[in-house]
Length: 491
Ligand code: FES
Image (cartoon, rainbow, N blue to C red; front, side):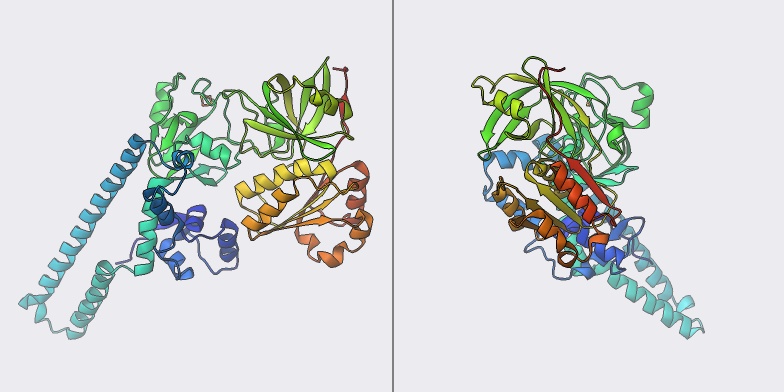
């Protein structure tokens, strides 16, 4: 009797054994771990990570901390689902458990009856002793399998169930992107937080643009919605992702923008939340979109900001698309002088600023599993920061290296870069103080695997040109020139 497989998506397997998705992908690629249609058998996972135990698993630790109320109230709200959702998940798992119990009971009955049959004199007296002995041995061996499941994979199955209650897993088809839904998030909110470019409009149950077809699993309504699905859509299993949360792990069919060209051009009136100094010459502009009209963009893209008497400036968004309501920009006094001065006027904060876009092709190649090299000079750090935060959310890159350059020795947000290296093993950061030209001369000795990397360069024209020339042989280079587009009063 072949034991049935307990298959896990790669993201879920990584979370259970507390390693990065890229680490599992590396082991799959090298043949150390086998997959079945992209899924990992839990028994193979337990064998590959024998040290994993219930004692230090992060999911179990989170449950313990919740029990101890070690989390702050706001964090608890983010992690814990509503009681009704929690009840639905527990009741669904109880149903599955009952079915599994019934199934095991039937197997045991079958084995008992078979053993009794073999012990009957008519069968026991068969002259084929060899055959009888073989059948007994076979039965004993499989009895053990049923009665004594391997301890390690048993622990992982238990953790997998706990994870399903706390954070069900979503797989989007055909992109095969995966993520988890935590706390009170809808399926859409959790997907956007993960940096996916899922189609949506209002986030509010009105437009129907976030429709998705359920391929497997169950969802429950978690927000009010006015949009009416047709009878055909209901029969086909369509739901609104902005108004539903998963009860079980789910597979959904939904459209995601595959390239920057697929995103619609948007026109949004945002609120200025803050203007803060990042350094003597750089200001941080924080805009917030309305809750029901957020900006869809890819990390690394730019938007136009409309200000004053019909003036515009084009700036790269410095924040991650995973937070599509809060948009950050690095405004350079030396790069976009008029806009910088406009922001220094006292009544800007709390006012409105119109944003149109997005535009630009300086975006991550999400399908690549190559290491990422980021080279940024001055305000070129803005789009690079967005790319890095997105890469962290997607968790595909095996390694990231960031080199920053500054003509004025202005490594603003230096602490943020250092905090990335403290929090993650697979990112290194270097603030380069020597002239860029000198550094470039020693580049191939410093990074001998340049050919195998995806390289992103951003900064002033002269910097981008010099680096592009030095990397002319590399076929995976993307470049962004900043500080080029300001049109005061020229809309
Ligand atoms: S995004 Fe508009 S209905 Fe979901």
